[in-house]
Image (tube, rainbow, N blue to C red; front, side, top):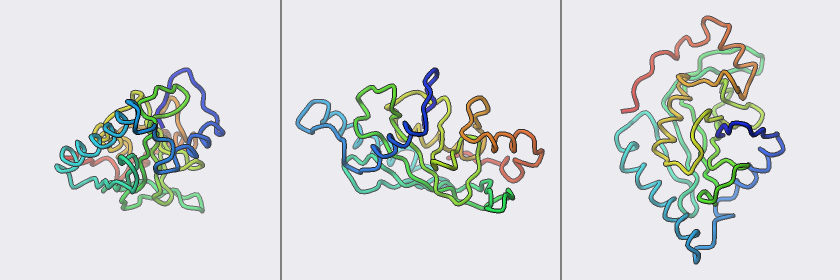
Length: 198
């Protein structure tokens, strides 16, 4: 989720946007229009540049496109431990990996201040982070610039968030996690040694 200053998003807004992003090919602009062709070119180039660039140089992150035009949706796996909040309320270090899905908005080249250009879902069990909404299963990207932006840049930014180097304390997605990471002196134990992506 991209944080947009001065705009408040309600849970119903978020759920509506999640529904809009759920279809793999739905909502793509008509390919016979200039915008439609430019959008398809963006998605094709976006994947190709990431695949032959950053993703060819790192073993710490695996990204694969999901079926659909573009592609505009990707499964990811970060080779990182993470803090896991168990159902009994205890927080423990999980060995990882952190897994999830990246979904770009189908009309990503059309400016829309009320809609995020990309949403990141995390599905690792119990994932606990100030930037993560456990209700919506969505990872907030913090002060990441509005899109469209390349998958390569997104993956690098995600690595900093998922490795707990970048935690939002001013607009957290999980206030309980903010209290935990802000007050427990051992909260980051096992997470501080972060290897570079490449």
